[in-house]
Image (cartoon, rainbow, N blue to C red; front, side):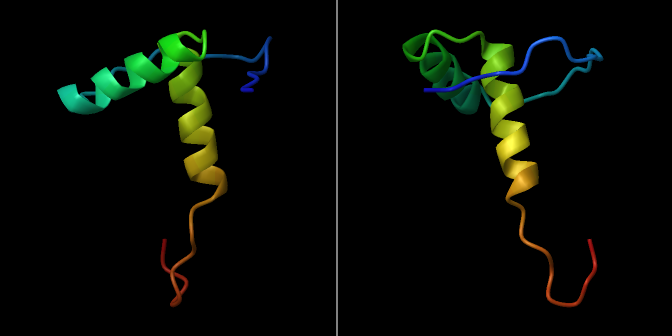
Length: 59
């Protein structure tokens, strides 16, 4: 179902996330046999790739 690229460069960052969101992500990761990190990377890539541009061109 989900595939993650291997062999990419990484950097360590810390983020504060709502408890409820982390619980949902943990459950999804477990159900799909992924690490939480792999799931978050995929979610962020999807969000960035599918972000809508503003009508006035501001970002």
